[in-house]
Length: 121
Image 1 (cartoon, rainbow, N blue to C red):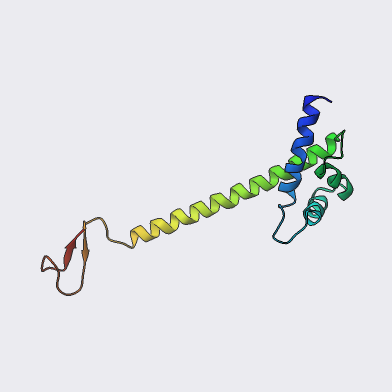
Image 2: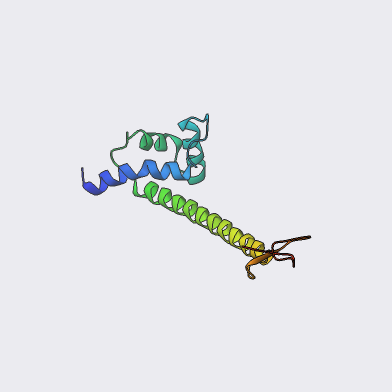
């Protein structure tokens, strides 16, 4: 068997895992394979055979479809993480703008070390 074919046979279960959204707590591998089959249009029996390494000759069409769906999943996850990061940065900027840390002191009500309402940081 060629090295490329072996590499593809090893890669396909990882693609199936990604496309099928992994296995949730208490779920069987069959449930994950079913999700991947519904998303990609690749028959469940074929994905099962890939998952359990029963396929010796992977079909190019199936491999391309699985790679495509895995790439879409990765792009969606990247976009979700980027949006979360931007949201966190905005929240941090809002928190900084609402806090007066630029003076090196904090204004307190009542008495203080300096007698004018400031305490050194």
